[in-house]
Picture 1 (spheres, rainbow, N blue to C red):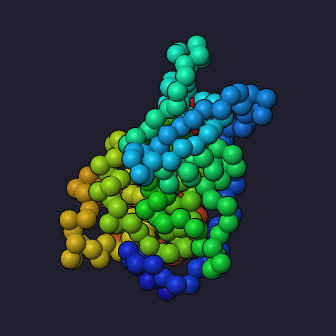
Picture 2: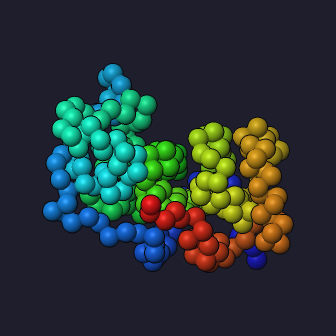
Picture 3: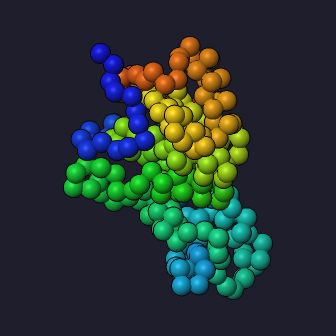
Length: 240
């Protein structure tokens, strides 16, 4: 018997996280001897800004943006912080945690759920994509899978955010399209079809055709876990 179709609402029985092997695209962290000097990064503006002190070597290792920003004048003795006025301090704090731990959070909540909302995970991906941090993006794809599986939910109301802030070849889009084909019930088409970008619907139709699947029917959770594990590397970006 098929499981109930996935909806956009969270359920209150939370399964444990699925064991995932280490991504083959993961690089070896830099040695502490290569951390270099500390860089001051000011994120946000006005009363909402926050200051972070981060090792230059970590920023350069993980981010192509910071490799560029900290080259040239910086290597020649430039004085002053790196300013990111358009970024969110809470999102950067997740990146900061990732730099030092390789993880996006410290511990699960008492009920066993991930301590980050799908919205925040999506924001972290968008930040990582914009700042050239592929391993951060890969970690957010895995965490988004775990979170949506626990909630048995689909972020239909966040699709506009995603499609407005990612390129057409985005791995995040690719993951969510497969998730939708496999497990989303598309109930919002009856009342809130404005939530679904036309480009997303087109991609769902094409992927359903390619996989010989009918979107909206839904599959067993165990089948979705198997499909994600088989396809996981397709959603990960190799470190540049």
